[in-house]
Image (cartoon, rainbow, N blue to C red; front, side, top):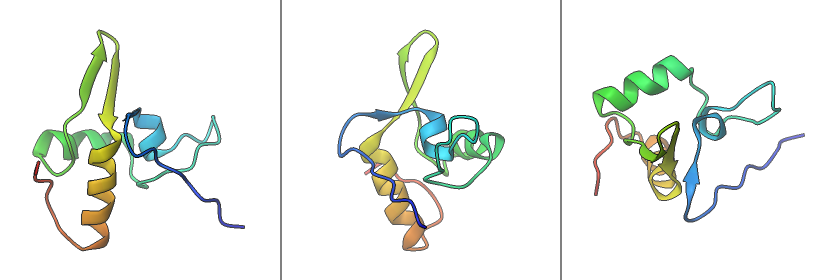
Length: 81
């Protein structure tokens, strides 16, 4: 059975919501390791995060929608439109 994942149109997603978390039984939107994701952010391949509080980092849902679309279209690098 395939699980459907719903991404909000606006708002923020935490890292575990993007790359998944087996302990919380959260499937990955983008199946990649934490290290690879953070390296991709650093290199500009993935969108930059937003600092919500001193200890809370998240990504804009709109940016994740764009990233998924870019990946499905075969684009290589993130460009902030």
